[in-house]
Length: 388
Ligand SMILES: *Cc1c(COP(=O)(O)O)cnc(C)c1O
Image: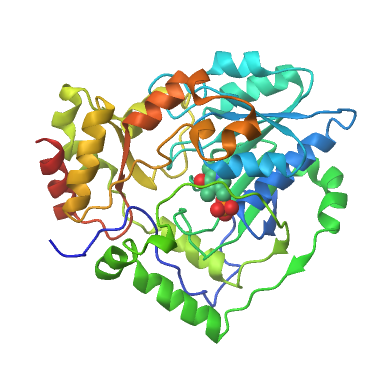
C-alpha cells in the first residue's frame, strides 16, 4: 500500500469572486456580522458580551459540553470566566438537558450550544433553559453551515470559523454574529479591537495553491506522516489574540457558493452502511436529524464528516486501523472527553470520569470523510471494510 490517503476532512480554499455583494448572508435578517481572526476569538467575544450582560458578577460561569473542541475552554478562560462542563446525552453529540439545567447557578452568564459535524445542538430546548435563567445562548456553529439560528434568531450570538477542516475554508478567520437587539450594547467592546487587514496578493495566492495541493491524496498521505506537523492531533492552545479581520474581498461569497454546490453524500453513506446498524453500530446523522430538531429543518444538512458510533472501543480502534491502512482517512475526532485532553483537567477542575456519556461517545466515535473528493467507490470500500 502506498502513501495515498483520502483526507479525513477539509474543503479546498476558493478564489475570491469578482461579483461579491450579490449574495445576501443567510443570517442578515436577524444578525449583524463582525469578522475576526478566528472562531475561537469570535467565541471569546461572545462570552465577553454575555458577561457584560450580567455585569455585577464576581466569578462568571459558562456552560459547555464535556466532549468538544479544546478551543471552547480557551475562549472561556480568556475572559476570566469559569468553564462548567456538562455531560452528553447518551449516545448523542448533544448535552444532557437535565444536566444543563442542573449546572445553572446565579453566576452562569451563558450556555454554549455546539453544533457537531453538521448536526446542530437542540437550540429550542436550550433557549428555554436560557430564558428561564435569564442568560445568553451562544450557538457555536464552527462545524455547521449555515447556523441553525440564521433564519429564526434563536441564539443571542452565533460563531463561525473559516479555518481548515471547517465547512467553509478560507485559510483562517471567523465571525461573530450578533443578534440585532444586542447591537448597541456590543458597540463599545467591538470599537476597541485592533484591526488586521488581509489581501489576496501573491503570497496569499501561493499559500492557497499549496494548501489545496496538500489536500490531494498523494500529498495528504505524505504530509500526515511528518510528525512535527501534528496533523489530526487535538491539543489545547490558550487564546492569545482577538482582532477584527475582514475576509479577502469576495472570498466568503465564493466559499458560501462552493459550500452550496457541494454534493451531499449522506444518503450514499446511510444506504451503504445500512447492514451495520443491525450489528450494534449507530449512524448518528439520520438518527439525530430525525429526532430532535423539533420540526425546524436546518437550512443545509450537509455534513462535515460522516459520524458513526461503533459497538465498542475495540471495534472502533480496529476499524480505524483497517480503514487508514486502506487509504481512507477515518478518524476518532477529538478522541477523548475534554478533561482527558492534556492540560485541560486542571483548567476545568474536573475529571473525565465525571462525564460517563462523553467518555463513552469519545471511545466509540469514528468519523468518515464527507468532503467533495469522496466518491461512491470510496464509500463502497469503507462499507466493505467495516462490515468485516
Ligand atoms: C474549530 C472550532 C472552533 C475554533 O475555531 P478556530 O477558527 O479554529 O479558532 C470553535 N468551536 C468549534 C466547535 C470548532 O470546531
